[in-house]
Image (cartoon, rainbow, N blue to C red; front, side):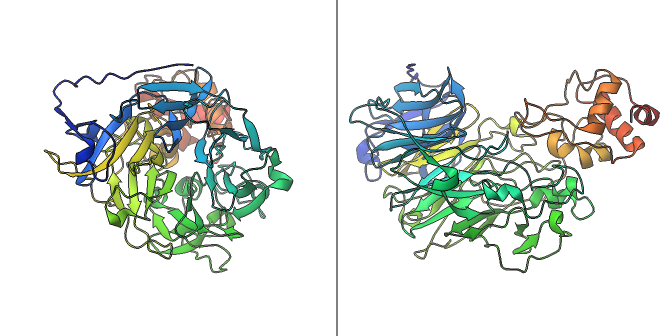
Length: 552
């Protein structure tokens, strides 16, 4: 087990000050240390931010015990351990003790329910009892649910939510973008019916107190047509389950005759669903267009970009966010520390997208949606916390310093936020104080931006066919698609590069496969390949149309 303590010394040039429990609204603990800039985050006036942990490791979801102990599921294991347990021993909101535990590969979700710590890796849901006084659980680990349908590299995290009747709900993501006959091939139709819906792309329900349940046979498919509902939460006030799945990608790349680059950046909506038993969200057959405010037929199934879905088979969202923001966690606020209008509302962590190129990426913020007593949104969403990326515009997710991923409510009503880049953990308090210099979060808005400059004058063919995955600046996206900048493959032998682009390739190192571009003519491919070989820090020779024709 590893133990870490954090330096509480003053940061150079930043004024730190102390507030006591008496000055915190409804008591947030003993002396807490805030800096006047809220660690660079912007939050509404009256809120202040404390850094609980600085470099925990790539974190996903988190949960907070009634004694204040924090448990974090790790996207990448730390010394082969995928869970972290944190404890603040002196009430200053900074974790003094950090222990890593659990040899389970990658962990995606962690929740506390009826005295147990529940957690999951890519294949199995576990639980272990939480004993009084223990930080790291020492009891026997039990298997709750197992044998989930295999997904390859796509959408494997099994996110958990609990109702009040002893059930646990588990997200099982889709293994593809949109169930095409040939995945990610432009113009390829969708499989009908989509076979992936049988065991994936939905929410399954299990008994929370039974062991060794199998998805097939023991699990009940509660909702379907949910591409990847990692933002999943039970609302105890409306007594209903909600999710915000990640929407499909690459509308323009796959169907350029129906969608522009801007259409592809803005669509489809990130749909906020209220679920019920038998609910169908419509994936892969349909998506929601927030601009038209209606469900549309997916182009893989006969849609042409302006074809409404009129069958009424699929549920509409209760709220629609812009496309490709990356909703990764959802909680409903039931505490008493925050002002009254927050009670019952939803906080949503948007990790930020990668599929808005050549336009700036969006997300990288925590939004708040007020809810009414009937369990529906009671007003427009507002930005609650932003500036996680620490840069004005993000063209690739790798540009962002931090990416908000997990949310949890503390026993005192404060809000915890986790970061999937470095594992920073923040805790947001309401104190009623206004900080010097201003700390207000920005207004929620969606702006039409010009495409990013890549490396000198942009090549239109590259921007049309390649930038959505490899980014306008050639940086790629970690774990998803490789960088072209400084690439030995790009600057290497012509034949290897041309054949890769013509034939496509699957890779064990990246979640997204390289589709084949043999449908493009020789002149277009030569133009694209010459552009990337002479840009992005590369200095290889150009490739001619005759070269492409010869290797084809």
